Amino acid sequence: QVQLDESGGGLVQPGGSLRLSCAASGSLSSSNIMGWYRRPPGKGRELVATITSDGTTNYADSVKGRFTISRDHTKTMVYLQMSSLKPEDTAVYYCTLRRPAYNDFYWGQGSQVTVSS
Image (cartoon, rainbow, N blue to C red; front, side, top):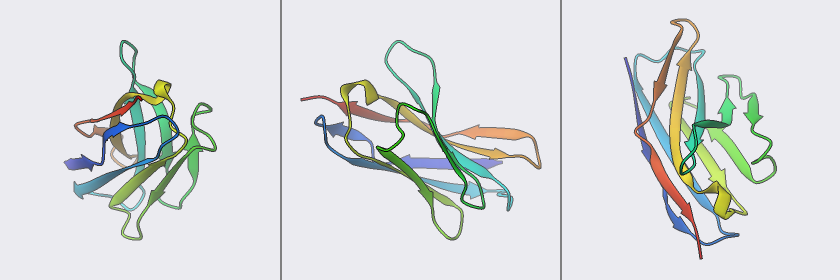
């Protein structure tokens, strides 16, 4: 089992910045893939960004150039640095972890990010 503990959500004005953090614990493999999804109000969950164990990143087109995903050297922490935030970035953001070796996928509890003036 894997546990994901998120922090860093909140209210920010348009054009502002915010950083989300996620700590993973439990049975972690060396090849896990961590990422962030979000659920905007009234919509389904959508991919924001992912990062592999070797540092390869992938971003949704809507956040490219504004958001940066990173992880620490222990590969148990993942971050999402969000800049130039727009009202349409308002959503519940979920940390995720996939273990290809076990073919399973885990979700964090979700952090609310609200972009509003």
